[in-house]
Image 1 (cartoon, helix red, strand yellow):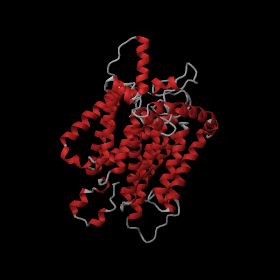
Image 2: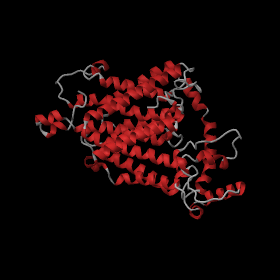
Image 3: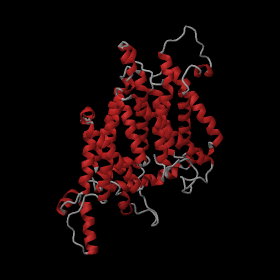
Image 4: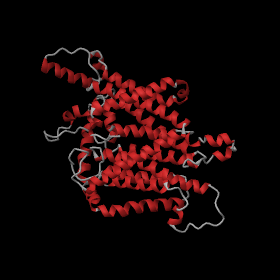
Length: 459
């Protein structure tokens, strides 16, 4: 949880990842027999990526660098001419320390994913506990963000505000919106599950459900509460004033409306109530601010397109090996010469293009193929599940991941550690198979197998 701005500081961030490496890495060693079933062929690409980042960071003979990355070697020749220093072995990446560091971070996230998958498949309490933690994080960030919008003088904890907009404890509103768009679909789906349980449970012959009050009176309070919290998270996303975040929200809402396993009538009721909450409270804050943000989208789009086109040459020059992660800001001034001397393009504002530049076309293409093919396989597995209850949260997590991937087209939300952490958490929620089917009490009572197809996960 990014409680402090220091969450993106190397010391604080390094502390987080060190704890993850020790905790989850040690846990995996102690439970290697139980977790081995979760190590599959699909984890080969992340392992290759980690190894590739190390390869970019280790010093190689200069003759090798001349062969693999002529543009990198040419820059080193210029350094030699200017300084007269002898050049021995050099890394392929322009910022080698960052490559080593990111390899360690991704290793920690990989350990976290394998551990979480095993825990989800063996302990339903942990599964539900994680959902409550996600809800608590999202609620805190959303309310803090909406308070920032209502009181523009508030900043990120002790830091002064850089302008009006909800951003919670995160500096950049785009990264905040990306986090909220990952969280709210899971919370919304958790809220509608009690309604699904009610639908699948035995019903009296005569029951009137003509009013909304009557509908809510027959469900656990957690359902309406989670839907309400999801609504405030969406409001925080909208009033972050991140145009990419707002568009990603619309995209995610369409995915949920299409793929949640409910009837058309049920979806109409749920989304009418949900969107009604959002628009009614949004009217109090004022929609004119949102509209004014989109009125200036033409100028921003023009600048970003110019950055994209200028950065393409960087990808062409380093097509094979890339420049190394977190190295873009070091070279952007060389390629983007039309910017003022006091301005710096530290990000491309397109994660796909930036990774293409930093990893090289072959490795980045392999990573993108792995991501999108994996998303397809996860979605296909979720759609074929017979148990609707087990599929609801999985589909919502998948939609949150899809939002994360779409938002990366026009922003750099993938760079925030907490966003990567929750993206991996959603991946574990979407790929978990058995956690929602665990009910030890029913197993002890030896209820027939068909009774376990629709478990009551809210008790």
